[in-house]
Length: 222
Image (tube, rainbow, N blue to C red; front, side, top):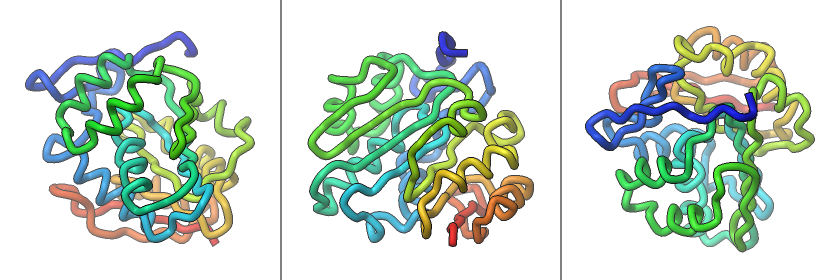
């Protein structure tokens, strides 16, 4: 698993599609607007930001969620570094990330800074960001992680195409690695995902989704 990379095709020359999962990496309508609606607003950010705030993510993909969160962190006047940990089985090559992120010029300043340092694996450190990518199958790596997140971005490929990243056992590990009062958000409202989060101890809400997706899921750990 450790030596596997993302295998891509490109829709309309600009939208990366995973050949492993036959699913695009971001919304064909507006991937950044979806990130802001689902993962940022879905976790009540930036209102919940405090020094040392820690976001964890299942599925790093193009890095768009990271960049949107980093941008929001800086623009909301936070001091110190945002902690961000992402679990990714099939990392995208930095050159492919750069190509995909051209679709979102509003995050270009953050993309440029990140990609200057990012080698495709490991970690990056900036004055306002501490990023770590944990490579491999999250079903194996998350149980071994010693961190705790204040907010989770659950952003695997479609549950119908990538059910491994949405199973009840993995949702239990998400809960185990969530701080008290922490939250999780995802674009999917699939029943088995919501039931898995509930079984793990989250209070789960189905709320309006982005664009053509009628519903999404927001969860809070007591």
